[in-house]
Image 1 (spheres, helix red, strand yellow):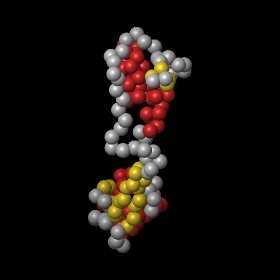
Image 2 (tube, rainbow, N blue to C red):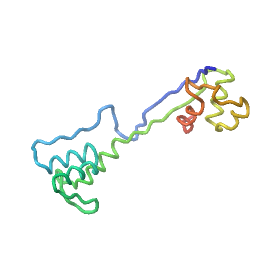
Image 3 (cartoon, rainbow, N blue to C red):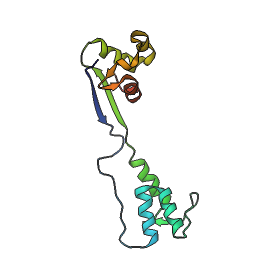
Length: 143
């Protein structure tokens, strides 16, 4: 059973995220500079691990290293929040076939009504996916 659902994905403009991410680099080879770059690119935990290998302690609770005048913890937080992207999906039926309508029902009402109608959920495919996987992925999509 093949359905003709079409999914349209749009990247929300809530954050300025593109295919490329901001990459920070250092002009010198000081350990402090390396930790700042690591914190900005990979997060504060990665910087703490690297610092421990060099005998430097980075506190989660108090200021320890300044990176261009900013606390190393703040740089990691800014990078973490700026790279989170939310993807919004819109799901709609492209035809009125029974299988398509069952897929739409599964998204809107869950799997129980669909299971009552067809019994075995493994027999239904939505956009080439098992209906259970399809619902997990797109249940909160705009319809």
